[in-house]
Image (cartoon, rainbow, N blue to C red; front, top):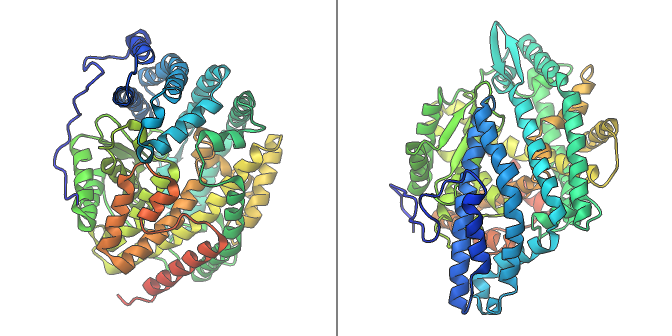
Length: 577
């Protein structure tokens, strides 16, 4: 049992020089050549070779990670932009051919069959898959694609509005959408919408370019379309396209009606004849917006305390990150949108980036990314870097489960029991509300990459999907354009295509983890930790099974878990303060 950790030091390198500074390809070329030419005369030689290759991967990953993190913190800094672009243009394209040759050296080794199958089977499955989809002609296309994808963050970071003589980021402006002043909400919504509208054409053009590049990459690799290529590239061994389609239809059948009831109840409580886009975030009972913390320091302190109550090890993870300045949480002009946890595979202490403005949503984001961070800590001692790189279906299970597991400790954010109750209700409603949006984005992507289309046809398709999976209660009259371009807010479509349905699968898993915790307490928590410690040394199904749950998104399972959440939600609503 892991209790706490007090200090983390970067492990001593066995193979790569501690003095390595990557400022040109020449500084690392010889390392790849040595690995490629090294003689392997026994299974122990092969395992030593794997460890050295893994160390190189960790060093390179961490160097690139810091460039990416710093660039996102300040998108206006040209030097930081150039540092990251150097990596994309000079390092990544040269690594790719060597990675393919090293993979082939491994697979063709006469000692391969002597490796422990239980230990290496998942890793080797991935290596063989990488070999199959690799095409040298895709290298310059992938470089260009990475450069283009950065433009979304840079474009979004420049989006601000003027309100009451103040310049606000869109994240800061969105806080006003929680105000009880309906006129203020409408005013701010209109300003946000008008600002987004200024870049609709630019984002349409960017997306068209991204689609063309992606389809070209897929065709080069022998796939009919980018959707099928990405299923292979992402190593989706444990489920299929048809499983995704079943997920979409099950969410439409069982989740959308629950959301419609919740939204109709909100409309009734707000006492409005028309439920408008600016009415969706305000408290339906006229309460002021929840204010769980003041500044990022307060958020950090309370999050550590919250994690400590659940498990001291979890709290110590956040404390170490804070002490090492691996947290950048507040929203500011020039900072890229969104939030992420970036693993740092060599030091083993990840970095959390987000845009906090003082909301309950920020608390959830911090806990979510904190769940990813705990996962990174729990798997940091696995032998190979590749063992630590988990598929999203597992990574998001760690983070989304943490959101629900910590709920009983949210009193650190809310001393007032009524506010705590509101936060819990919002969390459970959001857990369900997220599923239709996830299904919609995923269904949209399947269509995008399997159909030739124009930007206008793309908008029409989004509206069609929204009619089935979107919020069925909102009146968009007069703002039809905002609805048809709503998809442009989703970072994943631009930067990490097809990485989204994992949230839905993991949300179902998280509900199951929480149910297990409510039934079995500490035993369930240890199962959760045991699952995260596996990294990616087992299949997704085996990892979920270790966590005490099923990897299942059938209609029956979705219905079962939705019923559980509704029951828990009703119990909280009916609680007396």
